[in-house]
Length: 346
Length: 190
Image 1 (cartoon, each protein chain N blue to C red):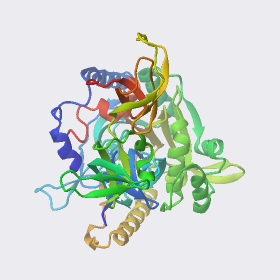
Image 2: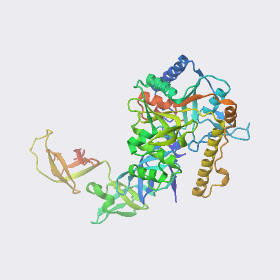
Image 3: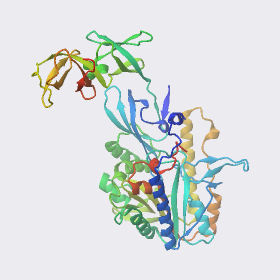
Image 4: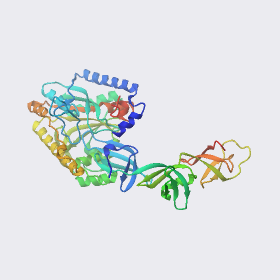
């Protein structure tokens, strides 16, 4: 990689990205997070980074690891979610974990392919109860005011004057063209258009001085959350029992009232697999020479499904980016500044 | 035809956008934790110098621009073109008014300039940040007036007009910051 070679010429190429004060601040943050959960009787667990199954989400790309011990590859976790749910199904109480997670193609001011997640699960809670606890943690860490909760629909009304639950792709493209220079961009579905509008026109305004908790995502963006019916703008629509947390325009955490129904879980995996194979074939058309074999195939995590079959207790869970939290606590501009060695120095 | 994927985007990369060569100034990776990734890019149009913002879907590829920066020596101007020479190959090349643009007023014969070529045609001429030019006309200042405070216009050998302190006289060579068009000091050897 070209950048890599350039970096080697720099005499400081071996030195840390973060300064020592930042490294100490990280140590204090990790300690206070552990104390936060210790006082709440939530148990710290450790699960493997390597897994034989992986995520099916077409927008998250796992890193693949080969071992001479196995004819099939292993995958580095993109979050500890599946392993922690297997623990919950086996009878664990409320648990938390501070773990490295990996996403192969995400790098930038707010992204690093290897990052630290804080993930926790609360037995018997729903996502609204969990929002309260996330709020408590953020008030403690950031010294900010208490957060506001606002619906996905309200935000689209406020910033773009549209109803995100009933726009089609054409309408969304027209709105996007009014606000963003996108040329002839082609996107796969309405959710991708909603992502474009949300990330460019809404997200930068969220969480000014206090966290913003966004709730009631479209059911097509439920991921692993339960879905409920809600009356929005006179229409009955299905929304996800999912929340996201933003502070100073930065996405910090994503949580669910967890889906426990294995049949519905299987169905969503199948929908993801379908999307993956579609984007795979699109890739083949674009790049002509790629052979069929490289179209992406990801093994569904059968152990998670089996755990859900056996019974996942009702629970709420959330994953929070520790590096981003530290970046906000210290008023830093980029993730690199809070990482000892970022992707290019690793 | 060379292309760059959004994964390769970084400041300084030269790409084609809507038929014009552009340089990437800033590349921000934007991605919801669960959702479509985008690259929000700021580019400078190298023909017009205008800055554009454009969002790409991550993973898309765009055409590379064949843009090259060379150090060439300025020779002369024939009214239509400004001619530059490669001091090794002695090859000459003419840059039009749009390419030379504001740099024209700082061009002194034999000075080395950065000439940006696009498909081998000069796209932009950049003079050094500091040039030394002779004053050909200015009001005579008062003798002994070395205090700062006052300034007066001065015409330079290249046709440029800059404001200079009152004590600087016709025939003197002065140093100018071409980025701001401001007088810096008298040249050392004048």
